[in-house]
Image 1: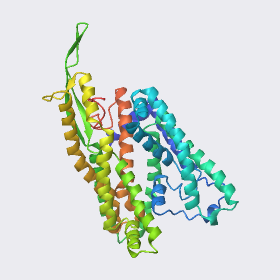
Image 2: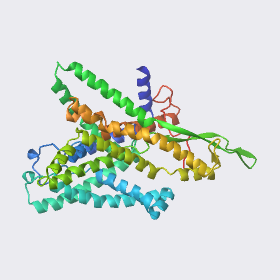
Image 3: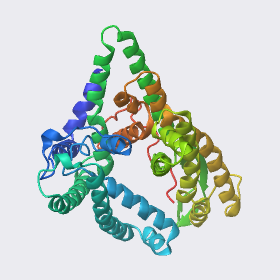
Image 4: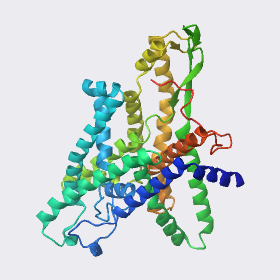
Length: 438
């Protein structure tokens, strides 16, 4: 414990780190305050504050801004959608591929295109949000005027969130957009814990202890899963330049067990709403369609969980295949006079990397599927719906990933100024050292 307080004192003794922490806290408070500002033309006393289905999932990411009909009701979700679209275009369209390879200038252009696309996506999502999630009972002004003005306000709110994210990235700690999503998720955690304690009461104290212990174990497992890396050794040939010898050192290619992150869960979750939506159209004409709709509307049914798990496994392989190119990695190594010991550079190296990637992707996809369906099992075991969301799924993966990235950034700033790090060894595991940058 004294070591922990000593490390915290070191953190706040560094002016740059102290300013970054204060900036991050300030920007996050501004985001949270904005989530309580209701759209003009809505009577806040008539809002139920509840969201179900996909709206409930979005409301979790936005910290209640969605159900509160806030000016930040869409949050950074349109930006996430635009980023995914641009990322897929960089794989399929040659123009975007060239931009991605142009370094800082290319990334700057891609970022501008992403923000422009965000505006259009935000306007489309605003129309859908106002027509489905905002009922007539809460609107106190003319509906056409309310819709027109709210579309502009929600779009502006999204761009304000994107601006906040950029400021956090530049002047704060961690990835700004990820921090905004994480703070929205965490904001609902105290209320979920409090409601769980009230529902259990004194007699359920033992059950509460078991629930918290299991949650802690799941978090530890997710941290290990997120940090698990398969390192491929790479040897660089020695080169003589102006009578000086360079190279000859051994480095590693780090291939994470969970290379795709939360993207397979997000893609799969989006598709899981289609069966219920399609079956609702035919439910009046077919009993089969009605039963399918009921099965896929409840995330605790075996049909939902089996289909959800299979989709996650498929999308994990798909997303890993389009994001990691073994041939390009092998070409970059060959260009820099690097090789895997015992493996000939070129096609054989690409084959070895692809083989290793395939072997670690299967267990990674299965573990990711298990994490994704854990909230359903927690809810079936008696945990409340709000609290069970933190037993796995996208929420837990995002929180763990953001916290680890932020800790790594703090660790780097501490070590740059010759302070002892956050960990006892002075080093956070899986930092980007001794790695090959393709």
